[in-house]
Length: 416
Image 1 (tube, helix red, strand yellow):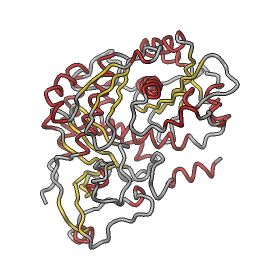
Image 2: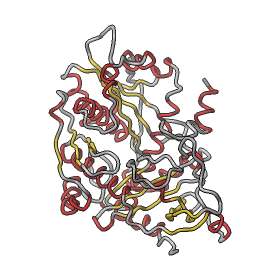
Image 3: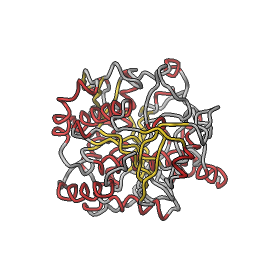
Image 4: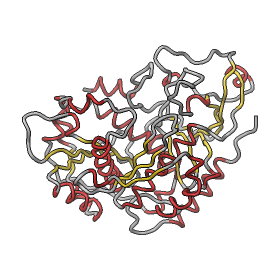
């Protein structure tokens, strides 16, 4: 069992590089290299990653916000990965990186080792408590049962922790060997360096937590947190809002930021023509989280546009055709009828803060979150880094887990 080499040192070095790579006017997040360079660096490895085709699918909808897809027909999970962005370059890079990170999670190149939970603890090692991620009807392996482990790093405790390989790998096929944990892409992320991946994965976990808590919001609260996109005074957001309106749709943006404080937004796109009855796919939603409120809002809007095209294309392996005929759930009508307010004011962080991991961790620490684990999964052979971020105390999306809600969701229910 070889200890994980210098995660803290890697992250510190990445932070220094990201600070120098900052480009004023960048419409997305801070990256070491731009979107086109990211795709070009990965292109020679498409065959190894199983990517056989890339396609721009923007034209399937009449809105015009760029959406691309990358196809991996031999995937162990989903064969199609979607990507979105304000520009075609960003959407293409988004699709490719998502496909690549899933490919690596399906066949993790990092060596695991066999040991029992008891043996690890007796040797003085911390072991991840995966009970909140158990599948329905399943239990963790017994304390003396041999399991396969990967080494992660707890960013708040500044110490290594061992995580079951099954929990962070992806395999939806009949060949899957173990059935203890609910496998998911929640917190799975990639980047041009490890820090990019960790920040992306952490933002996704905060976003998913905020989205689960938002489900308990009453209609009055939804109306009260509807934001006029114009308050950002951002050319990219204004352009997307104009495209949506010109296509005869309505954009609504909601500030769903939780008590953690990292900005989270939900965007919805619905028909401008009012109907007596709406179908399930008449309402498309997207979500985004980032240290920058502007970037978080942009991510939510582009994801809502991507959701529409995903629904139109029907390319997702996990789609249920009956959903196309379902009526919109009555409790979702509030998103169609909400009226935006322009009283909102959002402060943008200093440029260097976007590259500071501590800036993302401190809000979690203040909220009483005690553990944030990053599990490096590899990808460096392809010029990228992939990791899975695990935060047990944050809520997770619905799935096949034994425990649907954690303490934060239960508290949110009680407050309503």
